[in-house]
Image (tube, rainbow, N blue to C red; front, side, top):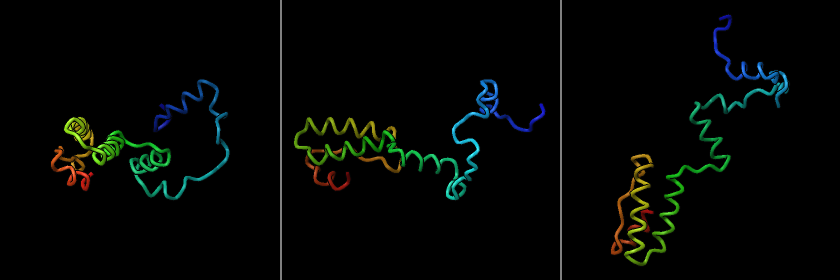
Length: 112
């Protein structure tokens, strides 16, 4: 092995004859300064946010909030509590919320 590192993408491009024929080659644009100041996960979060990606638990949180604010019956409370259970399974532990009840719906509206 003559290289000290593996360049899997470079090897694939070389085998397919595309190594010197890809978009952006030769532009010589340096990485943005902010890219070098963040770790890989922070960069992923920024790119995902800029692309409009919303994690499932946040999407579900917004949905629950809308349902709580329009809740009027026990049946609706049951549906909301099922969604809260799902939310709690997939969200970070500090973001988990308690189930709601119809008699404490005003308190739930403040929380959600």
